[in-house]
Length: 214
Ligand SMILES: C[S@@+](CC[C@H](N)C(=O)[O-])C[C@H]1O[C@@H](n2cnc3c(N)ncnc32)[C@H](O)[C@@H]1O
Picture: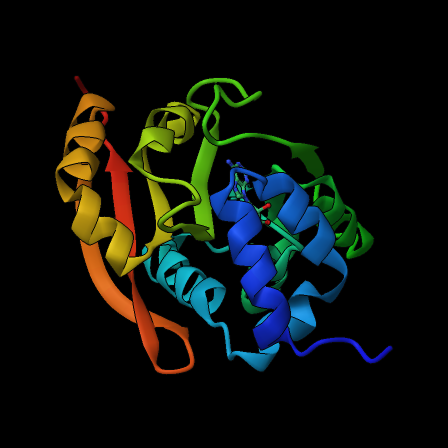
């Protein structure tokens, strides 16, 4: 039987995520994920990497420990390493709720470490241990929201940046909560710009900095 087009398969996938079956849905999607998102011109990870580059222009050659949260199959990590002149200086960590997505990421051989994580729970990394944290395509209605910020921002070093796409519909519904969580976590929202996400659609790209002093 011929495989259904992505537009049809996506309906079942969206329903499964909405029912709370996020990891199962992504496990099922892992093998065709990159082909599918390419077919919809997904560029959220490109926007995150571009923004990351613009905030780390002076870091060339410096040792940098980076965490890609909700890394999926590793699109952002792969692009980021390919776009810097000293990739050997970057230690790339990845975490995702879907083990099958992580298997695809592992096959790229670019991650220092990959593990199953749930952004809605405390993350299995030391506090204040990453020079930057990125997150592409994860914050959306029915997926993850601002409740994940304390878990993510805990592991970011003071003075460093968290860069993430945030779906516009989600932000419209939860703007106050984003501001509240960012402040509770002793962080500030430096930028909140619209950037390409897929086809002609945009998403916000947040740049959050952890303050050095309380
Ligand atoms: C649309 S994909 C984006 C993957 C990758 N960042 C990219 O840009 O291609 C969303 C990813 O978020 C992961 N995810 C969803 N909910 C999560 C959670 N609570 N904790 C960790 N990862 C989660 C999914 O498994 C999936 O790999």
